[in-house]
View 1 (tube, helix red, strand yellow):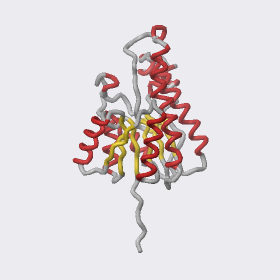
View 2 (cartoon, rainbow, N blue to C red):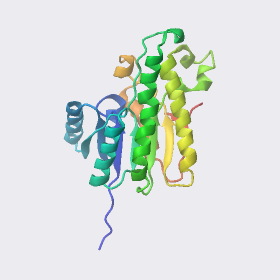
View 3 (cartoon, rainbow, N blue to C red):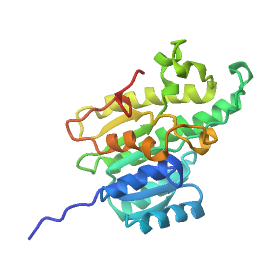
View 4 (cartoon, rainbow, N blue to C red):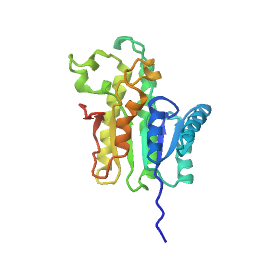
Length: 245
Protein backbone atom coordinates (compact mmCIF):
# COMPACT_ATOMS: atom_id res chain seq x y z
CA UNK A 1 0.00 0.00 0.00
CA UNK A 2 1.37 3.42 -0.93
CA UNK A 3 2.49 5.66 1.90
CA UNK A 4 0.18 8.61 2.60
CA UNK A 5 1.88 11.95 2.07
CA UNK A 6 1.11 14.29 4.96
CA UNK A 7 -0.06 17.70 3.77
CA UNK A 8 1.93 20.58 5.21
CA UNK A 9 0.02 22.94 7.49
CA UNK A 10 0.95 26.58 8.04
CA UNK A 11 -0.41 29.12 10.54
CA UNK A 12 -0.05 32.78 9.59
CA UNK A 13 -1.05 35.30 12.25
CA UNK A 14 -2.58 38.57 11.08
CA UNK A 15 -3.33 36.96 7.74
CA UNK A 16 -6.54 38.71 6.75
CA UNK A 17 -4.76 41.52 4.86
CA UNK A 18 -1.46 42.99 3.71
CA UNK A 19 1.73 40.98 3.95
CA UNK A 20 0.09 38.27 6.05
CA UNK A 21 -2.57 37.58 3.45
CA UNK A 22 -0.01 37.53 0.67
CA UNK A 23 2.18 35.10 2.64
CA UNK A 24 -0.86 32.86 3.04
CA UNK A 25 -1.57 33.09 -0.68
CA UNK A 26 1.98 32.23 -1.70
CA UNK A 27 2.10 29.28 0.71
CA UNK A 28 -1.22 28.13 -0.70
CA UNK A 29 0.32 28.12 -4.17
CA UNK A 30 2.80 25.56 -2.84
CA UNK A 31 -0.03 23.17 -1.96
CA UNK A 32 0.20 23.94 1.76
CA UNK A 33 -2.92 24.04 3.90
CA UNK A 34 -3.07 27.60 5.21
CA UNK A 35 -4.60 28.53 8.56
CA UNK A 36 -5.57 32.19 8.43
CA UNK A 37 -4.99 33.50 11.94
CA UNK A 38 -7.24 36.49 12.67
CA UNK A 39 -8.92 38.33 15.54
CA UNK A 40 -11.96 39.43 13.56
CA UNK A 41 -14.06 36.49 12.36
CA UNK A 42 -15.74 38.39 9.52
CA UNK A 43 -12.44 39.60 8.08
CA UNK A 44 -11.02 36.12 8.42
CA UNK A 45 -13.98 34.66 6.55
CA UNK A 46 -13.44 37.13 3.70
CA UNK A 47 -9.74 36.25 3.47
CA UNK A 48 -10.46 32.52 3.44
CA UNK A 49 -13.06 32.95 0.71
CA UNK A 50 -10.54 34.84 -1.45
CA UNK A 51 -7.93 32.12 -0.98
CA UNK A 52 -10.38 29.33 -1.72
CA UNK A 53 -11.59 31.17 -4.81
CA UNK A 54 -8.01 30.91 -6.09
CA UNK A 55 -8.09 27.17 -5.43
CA UNK A 56 -6.09 27.08 -2.19
CA UNK A 57 -6.84 25.03 0.92
CA UNK A 58 -7.49 27.67 3.57
CA UNK A 59 -9.24 27.72 6.93
CA UNK A 60 -9.83 30.40 9.53
CA UNK A 61 -8.28 30.20 12.99
CA UNK A 62 -9.46 32.79 15.46
CA UNK A 63 -6.47 33.98 17.48
CA UNK A 64 -5.63 37.12 19.41
CA UNK A 65 -1.88 37.11 19.99
CA UNK A 66 -2.32 39.27 23.11
CA UNK A 67 -4.73 36.78 24.72
CA UNK A 68 -3.23 33.51 25.99
CA UNK A 69 -6.67 31.90 26.31
CA UNK A 70 -7.31 32.63 22.64
CA UNK A 71 -3.87 31.29 21.72
CA UNK A 72 -4.46 28.12 23.72
CA UNK A 73 -7.78 27.51 21.99
CA UNK A 74 -6.15 27.99 18.59
CA UNK A 75 -3.40 25.49 19.43
CA UNK A 76 -5.99 22.98 20.65
CA UNK A 77 -8.01 23.38 17.45
CA UNK A 78 -4.95 22.78 15.29
CA UNK A 79 -3.97 19.76 17.38
CA UNK A 80 -7.45 18.24 17.16
CA UNK A 81 -7.86 18.94 13.45
CA UNK A 82 -4.39 18.33 12.03
CA UNK A 83 -2.29 16.83 14.82
CA UNK A 84 0.75 18.87 13.85
CA UNK A 85 1.98 22.19 12.47
CA UNK A 86 4.74 22.57 9.89
CA UNK A 87 5.07 26.33 9.53
CA UNK A 88 4.42 29.19 11.92
CA UNK A 89 4.55 32.72 10.55
CA UNK A 90 4.46 35.28 13.36
CA UNK A 91 3.25 38.14 11.19
CA UNK A 92 0.80 40.04 13.41
CA UNK A 93 2.26 43.40 14.41
CA UNK A 94 1.28 46.95 15.27
CA UNK A 95 2.68 50.47 15.25
CA UNK A 96 1.03 53.14 17.40
CA UNK A 97 3.40 56.04 16.75
CA UNK A 98 2.75 58.97 14.48
CA UNK A 99 6.00 60.93 14.47
CA UNK A 100 6.47 61.48 18.19
CA UNK A 101 9.96 62.02 19.53
CA UNK A 102 11.23 59.34 21.92
CA UNK A 103 10.78 61.77 24.81
CA UNK A 104 7.16 62.27 23.75
CA UNK A 105 6.36 58.56 23.50
CA UNK A 106 4.27 57.27 26.38
CA UNK A 107 5.13 54.15 28.33
CA UNK A 108 1.62 52.90 27.50
CA UNK A 109 2.40 53.11 23.77
CA UNK A 110 5.57 51.09 24.30
CA UNK A 111 3.74 48.49 26.39
CA UNK A 112 0.98 48.11 23.79
CA UNK A 113 3.51 47.74 20.99
CA UNK A 114 5.57 45.13 22.82
CA UNK A 115 2.40 43.27 23.84
CA UNK A 116 1.76 42.38 20.20
CA UNK A 117 5.17 42.57 18.53
CA UNK A 118 7.19 40.72 21.18
CA UNK A 119 5.13 39.12 23.93
CA UNK A 120 2.54 37.91 21.42
CA UNK A 121 5.22 36.20 19.35
CA UNK A 122 6.59 34.47 22.44
CA UNK A 123 3.13 33.34 23.57
CA UNK A 124 2.16 31.99 20.14
CA UNK A 125 5.51 30.29 19.59
CA UNK A 126 5.40 28.58 22.98
CA UNK A 127 1.87 27.34 22.35
CA UNK A 128 2.66 26.03 18.85
CA UNK A 129 6.07 24.48 19.56
CA UNK A 130 4.64 21.09 20.65
CA UNK A 131 2.82 20.92 17.31
CA UNK A 132 5.90 22.02 15.38
CA UNK A 133 7.91 19.28 17.09
CA UNK A 134 5.50 16.76 15.53
CA UNK A 135 6.47 18.03 12.09
CA UNK A 136 9.24 16.41 10.14
CA UNK A 137 10.81 19.82 9.63
CA UNK A 138 9.12 22.67 11.47
CA UNK A 139 9.73 26.25 10.38
CA UNK A 140 9.17 29.48 12.32
CA UNK A 141 9.43 32.89 10.66
CA UNK A 142 9.21 36.07 12.71
CA UNK A 143 8.27 39.20 10.77
CA UNK A 144 10.77 41.81 11.92
CA UNK A 145 11.96 45.04 10.29
CA UNK A 146 15.19 46.67 9.18
CA UNK A 147 14.07 49.49 11.49
CA UNK A 148 14.92 47.12 14.33
CA UNK A 149 18.51 46.73 13.15
CA UNK A 150 20.88 48.24 15.71
CA UNK A 151 23.59 48.40 13.05
CA UNK A 152 21.43 50.55 10.79
CA UNK A 153 20.12 52.64 13.70
CA UNK A 154 23.69 53.50 14.75
CA UNK A 155 24.72 54.52 11.22
CA UNK A 156 23.76 58.16 10.55
CA UNK A 157 24.06 57.48 6.82
CA UNK A 158 21.48 54.69 6.89
CA UNK A 159 18.00 55.42 5.60
CA UNK A 160 16.63 53.58 8.61
CA UNK A 161 18.44 55.81 11.12
CA UNK A 162 16.18 58.64 10.01
CA UNK A 163 13.05 56.74 11.06
CA UNK A 164 12.76 57.42 14.79
CA UNK A 165 10.01 55.26 16.31
CA UNK A 166 10.95 54.37 19.87
CA UNK A 167 8.26 51.76 20.53
CA UNK A 168 8.16 50.07 17.12
CA UNK A 169 11.89 50.02 16.40
CA UNK A 170 12.82 48.74 19.85
CA UNK A 171 10.12 46.07 19.66
CA UNK A 172 11.60 44.72 16.43
CA UNK A 173 15.12 44.81 17.91
CA UNK A 174 13.75 42.81 20.85
CA UNK A 175 12.06 40.40 18.45
CA UNK A 176 15.38 39.78 16.73
CA UNK A 177 16.90 38.89 20.10
CA UNK A 178 13.93 36.62 20.88
CA UNK A 179 14.52 34.84 17.58
CA UNK A 180 18.14 34.15 18.49
CA UNK A 181 17.21 32.74 21.89
CA UNK A 182 14.77 30.27 20.34
CA UNK A 183 17.36 29.34 17.72
CA UNK A 184 19.73 28.35 20.54
CA UNK A 185 17.10 26.14 22.15
CA UNK A 186 16.12 24.52 18.84
CA UNK A 187 19.68 23.92 17.69
CA UNK A 188 20.07 20.22 16.91
CA UNK A 189 16.35 19.78 16.16
CA UNK A 190 14.65 19.75 12.75
CA UNK A 191 12.99 23.10 13.59
CA UNK A 192 14.45 26.25 12.07
CA UNK A 193 13.60 29.79 13.15
CA UNK A 194 14.55 33.04 11.44
CA UNK A 195 13.66 36.72 11.58
CA UNK A 196 12.92 38.52 8.34
CA UNK A 197 12.44 42.08 7.18
CA UNK A 198 9.86 42.19 4.36
CA UNK A 199 11.02 45.65 3.30
CA UNK A 200 9.06 48.90 3.12
CA UNK A 201 5.74 47.47 2.00
CA UNK A 202 2.62 49.55 1.41
CA UNK A 203 0.27 48.43 4.20
CA UNK A 204 -2.16 49.88 6.73
CA UNK A 205 0.75 49.97 9.19
CA UNK A 206 2.40 52.84 7.28
CA UNK A 207 -0.71 54.36 5.67
CA UNK A 208 0.31 52.65 2.42
CA UNK A 209 3.40 54.82 2.00
CA UNK A 210 5.69 51.87 1.27
CA UNK A 211 7.20 51.40 -2.16
CA UNK A 212 6.94 47.60 -2.23
CA UNK A 213 3.79 45.58 -2.86
CA UNK A 214 2.58 42.95 -0.37
CA UNK A 215 3.51 40.34 -2.97
CA UNK A 216 7.12 41.58 -2.95
CA UNK A 217 7.14 41.82 0.83
CA UNK A 218 5.98 38.23 1.21
CA UNK A 219 8.81 36.79 -0.88
CA UNK A 220 11.49 36.64 1.84
CA UNK A 221 9.19 35.28 4.59
CA UNK A 222 7.93 32.55 2.26
CA UNK A 223 11.47 31.65 1.23
CA UNK A 224 12.44 31.13 4.86
CA UNK A 225 9.21 29.24 5.58
CA UNK A 226 10.18 26.76 2.87
CA UNK A 227 13.89 26.58 3.64
CA UNK A 228 15.52 23.17 3.17
CA UNK A 229 16.79 20.96 5.97
CA UNK A 230 20.32 22.27 5.44
CA UNK A 231 19.13 25.87 5.39
CA UNK A 232 19.84 28.60 7.94
CA UNK A 233 18.44 29.08 11.41
CA UNK A 234 18.94 31.95 13.82
CA UNK A 235 19.42 34.54 11.07
CA UNK A 236 18.01 37.97 10.23
CA UNK A 237 17.29 38.31 6.53
CA UNK A 238 15.59 40.44 3.91
CA UNK A 239 14.87 39.82 0.25
CA UNK A 240 18.60 39.87 -0.56
CA UNK A 241 19.65 37.44 2.16
CA UNK A 242 21.31 38.06 5.55
CA UNK A 243 21.01 41.64 6.79
CA UNK A 244 22.74 43.37 9.76
CA UNK A 245 21.34 42.83 13.25
